[in-house]
Amino acid sequence: MPILKVDIRAKEYLTSKGEGLLVMSDLNFEIKRGEFMCIVGPSGCGKTTLLNIMAGLDNHYYGSVLYTGERTRKVNSDRILIFQDLGLFPWLTVRQNVEFGLRVRGMSKSGRGKISRKYLEMVKLGKFSDYFIHELSGGMRQRVALARALAVESDILLMDEPFSFLDAQTRDTLYEELQRIWAITRKTIIFVSHNVREAVCLGDRVLVFSASPNSKIKAVFKIDLPRPRLIESEGLMSEVRPIMEALKPEIGRSHG
Ligand SMILES: Nc1ncnc2c1ncn2[C@@H]1O[C@H](COP(=O)(O)OP(=O)(O)O)[C@@H](O)[C@H]1O
Ligand SMILES: [Mg+2]
Image (cartoon, rainbow, N blue to C red):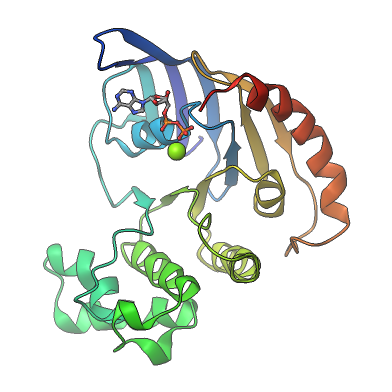
């Protein structure tokens, strides 16, 4: 059974002019447990909208999203968590940030400590647990956010262009780190990107969206390259090219 089965018949927004905007329709796909799925598409095609729907944050659509066969209707961090880089609290230490969600749930101090240690070690920030967020580099902040997302121990991680504001070098390191962590934790990851190379480097599959309005899945590419994959490796290019070709006319049509 797929961990997620997405069947969105139609998703509309009401614009400020009071008109309906059909963002997407007839979107059908399944995600296997443990899969790393990347989604690429032009700006404004509805990628963030789709993540919100999958997370259960947006229920205003026609269709269904099934989590292990059941309908998802509300946010449930046991299952699905959206990974955002902006949610770190600057007045808390690294460790307190990672433990925040666990504290909200009422977990004991020792329980929280055990989990935060585990995941801070995993993202290689064990030595920085008492630092404040403003003392960290952009890449380190991403690692804290990742550790915090992992600490909740949800099955699925939804990541919305998480590395877009980092410099290239930091980003390349994080591609390797994310693959390593994915391999250890066996999470299901759904990763939105606007960079095809990044999507090929990370994904088992790459799903290409067409431009809005009324976006659809234009193509799905299976990436069979051995792991761990390096972003600069020659082998990526042959997989990148056909995806670029599918995406290019859509970026041309998009006004996002
Ligand atoms: N809350 C909203 N109300 C009205 N329109 C929205 C809202 N959120 C997004 N949109 C519109 O829906 C489309 C898809 O947006 P979004 O999911 O953010 O795209 P992407 O993440 O692919 O860039 C865009 O045209 C955007 O302007
Ligand atoms: Mg977006």
